[in-house]
Image 1 (cartoon, rainbow, N blue to C red):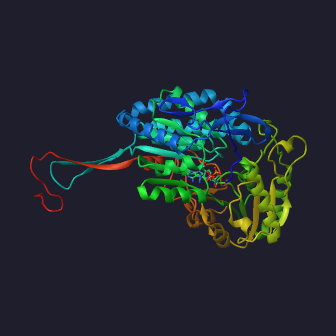
Image 2: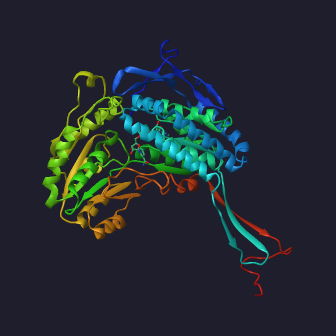
Image 3: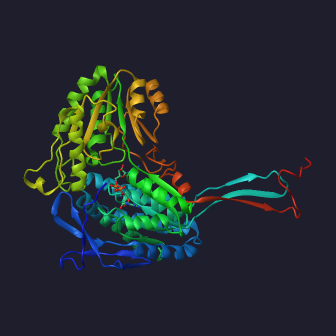
Length: 510
Ligand code: NAD
């Protein structure tokens, strides 16, 4: 995805606040002193602040600090590390409303949703704090007498966390909290569109007492990301973002044999069967398709409807989509905020054009909104295409905006085939009252997440989260699955027989 930041000489403007990097426990400017602007996507006149346009050298300093801090942090007992996380969670609870407002202001989604984003960070932080007293390993019998066998989780070292702008606090928490509780140190590079929410999160960790160097924060673009994917001291790269950048990160990290955890794009589907509760399905498609202005990796950007209920569904869905209130997310009357940037809005408009040229029927929306206050931001009408063929680009490619493609099917088998017929594999859902259909779809849809009678969004922090195919590379975040990303197993054998015993060779008397 493109970014709309501009590099500027420093100092910017006396009234504009400039925010620094956090390296080795100090808030410091980048070496070059260059900064970039952070503006409100609902109102481009609203300049939120200037953030450090860091270079590889700044990122290097952060990795070095994290590498030094690892030698101490790995020896802190996990329940003690967890105490800092518990404290951090409490601080986020106290600051929740301000954090939600900052987030809406910098990336546009409506307040109700940014409160949810902050809440997810709270939930994840409490959950991972609890893991400070678990991180269970195994104790198993040895095949030899007087020998003890067990496995324990070990931290890996410095973890790079590279995050997107659409969940600016939740996603960093999914990575940083499990990394910390496992005993790793962190260098965090947020998306350039959402540095304030990232900074708010880091400030919480500082205030909660995280030791210097354990969490480092560097804002900037691909130069920072490249250093964080290639530096020798980095052992884990945890990335969430687009599939194309994820591929680059994967390639950059491969020669150093780093553990690479990738969460990437999606083209998720809601399947609506002939026996579905139609109003419930319409509600789900509105929330799944237009929540976060369609800018969720799990957005329900495709809907496939059984032909017998297609017309009824399309009539209701289109009517409801047209009635959604679009505007500044800080105004609680609004249901849909802006696209995050001009380039993201241009992508939406490009796909609206592609869809029409491909022969899909434009049923709702299709235009940029520019009347009155809306002219100040990147607003677009909630858009519905009907008569979409599964092979059209609008049904295959991630648009990341308020555009839903509706298709027809004649059977469950066809719906599943359409569902699986894209390069991505993050989330899918089915609306049906037939338990056999629900279980068949659950089994045969090749995604990391599946919902029954609910939209494709709504993950909870204590279950694994992630996708298949071009969405992910086999790892999962959240839940205890996240511990598998941020720790590795050590198997330990203790022989207390006082003699050499050889596994697989020495046979024991019963
Ligand atoms: P993006 O790929 O443009 O950027 C993601 C991050 O990578 C940013 O911090 C960016 O600065 C950084 N980056 C850019 N170039 C880099 C490089 N060469 N090396 C290292 N880092 C680099 O994505 P975005 O526009 O911020 O976010 C939207 C995308 O994220 C969508 O594709 C969406 O589906 C995906 N996403 C996926 C999930 C998931 O869990 N699967 C969740 C949220 C978002």
